[in-house]
Length: 247
Image (cartoon, rainbow, N blue to C red):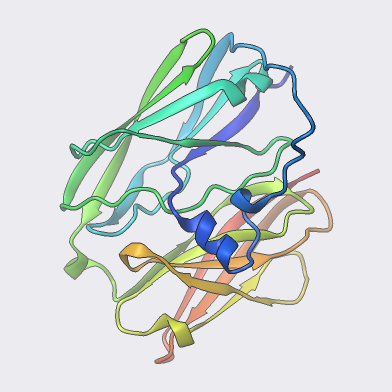
């Protein structure tokens, strides 16, 4: 049996804020309360598939929503995993959210953690299977720079996984020091030949501005998304990312 892969991310108030705007998110999905799933099997093994270095600016969220990817055998055991993150800066460890994307669809939100001080940090991520208490620990490096050294306009696209029928997702995050983003514009090209779509801009704590879009892909595959942000003063920032569409 092929292990199911999970992406681990840290979630703040983004889901609730999006829901308030009428944007679908993981938090706003309807649930069938009358269905009771059988208890999932315990994990016989947990494997760290990949880690991704974190980078950011002091006082702003780190710029990677997916610091770790893991797989478990059997794959249904992923629902049992408890993930704790110690950011390495003296703050209390926090519990992370585990999103499976094969075959389930979930989007990991980009808000994660803000380091107060400039420097290099090591985040420790502990993954535990609740029934067996099997534990795997991995570490991720984080580099944090001074806001004075950061570009006045910066941002990054967010790589995503999900179903071809997925709709709303957060595709990019932008920091615009000089402009009021309430009158800024964002356009998203989903990389499948369809028409470009206006992105939804939402301001978050720490100066972050997330860009969300809605799309359905024609077939499974990897698509390169391009998000173009235009500030009120006319400055333009182009960000790319990948969407892996699954059945």
